[in-house]
Image (tube, rainbow, N blue to C red; front, side, top):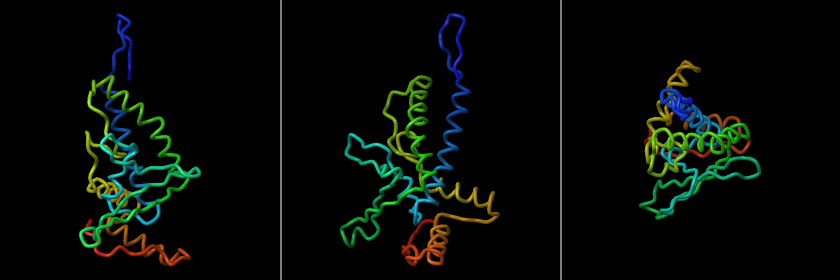
Length: 191
């Protein structure tokens, strides 16, 4: 990614840096899928995509915590907010292996990626605090839909979407979890 010029100056190989950024992006897609599928009842795409790894100066709070060696994601859900005036706070725990991947990403990959962005592309504005950043914002749930569809087609030879997988996970949990399974969220609009 870097070379020394004849004048002993560091010179960034922008194609190599861009290739690294693309690999990080692919990793984040797979991490998104892993978190969606292994962290308990699958969240709505907007819940998951909105996860932030850091608090912000504007008062937004992170939704990723480490508890006894496992990562916990904390999201809020606003279904029925206009009627009840309250939100649901939802805690989900990731398996050890997925927790470790997320910790390594936040500890090693993200800071390196951010420094490369500053050094190579001269970025001045603050980096996004979203786990799945897009410029200063975040990915949208259609990205998760595309990832689920692509991976299901590739490895399961079938078609899946966020909504179909959520219903599938609820049905599997009812059949195989002693507690009777996940409770169904009726009326989801995501496809």
